[in-house]
Amino acid sequence: MSRTKTIRKKTSKTAKMVVKKSIKKATKKTIRKNTRKKAPQQIKKEPFVLQPLRGMKDILPQEQPYWEQVRRVTEKLAREYGFSRIDIPIMEFSNLFVRNIGEGTDIVEKEMYAFTTKGKNKVALRPEFTAGICRSFIQNGMHILAKPVKLFSTGPVYRYDRPQKGRYREHHQVNYDVFGEQDPILDAQIIQIASRTVQDLGIKSIQIQVNSIGCPTCRKDYRELLINYLESKKSKLCQDCKRRLKTNPLRVLDCKEDKCAQVSASAPQSISHLCEDCHTHFKTLLEYLDELDLSYIINPQLVRGLDYYTKTVFEIWSGSEEGKKLSLGGGGRYDKLIESMGGHEMPAIGFAIGMERIVEEMKRVQAKSYSPPRPKVFLAQLGNLAKKKSLKLFAELGKNGILIAESFGRGSLKSQLKVANKLKVSFTLILGQKESLDETVIVKNMATGVQETVSMNKLVSIIKKKLKTDNVVVYHHNK
Image (cartoon, rainbow, N blue to C red):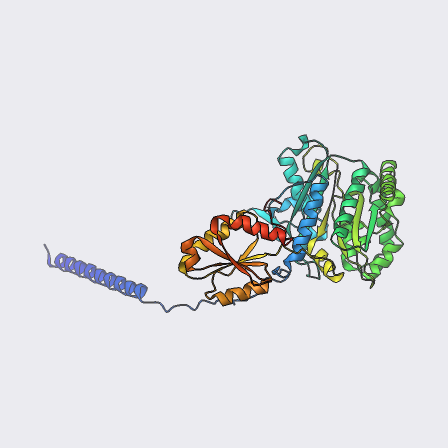
């Protein structure tokens, strides 16, 4: 091998070694860099706010008697008029509301709580009950049931609107719906139920407002007439109503802006442009209301805010003496809604009442709230053995319909008797160490202070007899 080749070979080996060393060095440097401890990043914490979201509120224990009164009265009337309860999901696919309530309505355009789930479904919290109930009606084949089908529901609804008194972003409704009958006698009965509901809750001064917005046949001509009139007054309308001219012109009649109300006052009236069938339907309804002695006002500006309404629409207003009137609820016919959703032809009518507004009005007129039954017997215990025995004794008395109070956490007899006095019970049962061993109980008459010791196995019958003598009604769970 020549000297030149030997030198070239050695040089090549040296170059390879240099490259390998540089690669190794660079790799170690990269590893050191990657394994170097990173400084902990500062995680920005969300502020912890002790309050509900805007437009939502707690219903506290002191408010519950009013709410319980609303629940009891509405459920009683539902049973009386033959309604069956239905509960539907709070959340539905959003297109259920967009399609059936109407894209041009305020609810769909501005007020829906709509969002996309992790599964990419477009959903919305229900802004009202009717669309969901109709979905359930079709899905579960309720068209085969005996007509009319009467459904009753209650619960929260959600609207991302500006919160106001009696109308929160989460508010509650009582809902009645009737399917399968187009006779106006059902319209009259629904208005009667709405009126009775409000008055049975102690709100005696009310006003029934009623109107007919016709059917799709006669509404088409009226709609064109209304648009022509509103176009001539367009400069006097608010921005929302200018937009409604193209999407939902009937809603202009219901606008609360003063300048729009002035325009609406001279607008063509739907009841003057009804077809023969709608005219007969409305005339017959008014005759039924007269027969029921239900006073009403025909309000030509009443249209309701949803696209699915046909023929009869109505609202129940409080008749405040101060002149401030408040809509407590309302409804109307939606004869084409089930069919438009893919179901059988099914006339329908319904109404909803806002529970928050009803409660506010009950307070204003000082209506009676629900008074739960008060316990007339108090169970006091002293000592560990008595505590163990008292749990079973408490349950036994409750099972036999005796409403009983206790204060298990209190140790001294004195502190427990203080609670008994505060509750104004008729009798206090005292169970101590001796009584627990003897299977007896001391019965103390709180009015006279007289005490007697009775056997545990005779306690229930003795207490029932004493309460009966005291004219106290025994509580029954099944009522």
